[in-house]
Length: 200
Image (cartoon, rainbow, N blue to C red; front, side, top):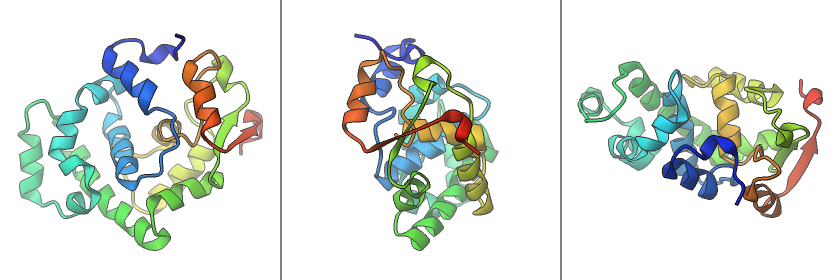
């Protein structure tokens, strides 16, 4: 069975690839989890995030954004003292701050899902040439989303980080053509094809 090469380093990464990565995601709690894992990943690697995922869930109440938005200094200390947790106070504070920004988007759009998928008009984007291995670190779409998130106060969500999130939550299908998940994702979502060089 063919898979995208990046996931082949261990079983947890394979499971994440096979069951979650690139599947159109419309649940706000999972959106928050994926987005905050991307934010914490800055300067690190995604394999580490997947290996520590249960620690993150324990620290942040299963990524319940309502609870996280209400965290206090005591919670920051609790998280900092959790064995195996990334010891970055700035990132922990950013997750709490971002939860409050996330809540404001929900107030404005009804759900974060409505907000984010609005950028692609509710469709999964298939960029030509990406499935041949020409995947960029960022593009015009991720630039636009990142710019808007920053305007709304979000931290640690630059364009490269946002592009990774767009891949993870299925707004962009970047499975290679040979991967068994490529056609499965295509079959389960409304897809629009775009030329990469037409991105602003």
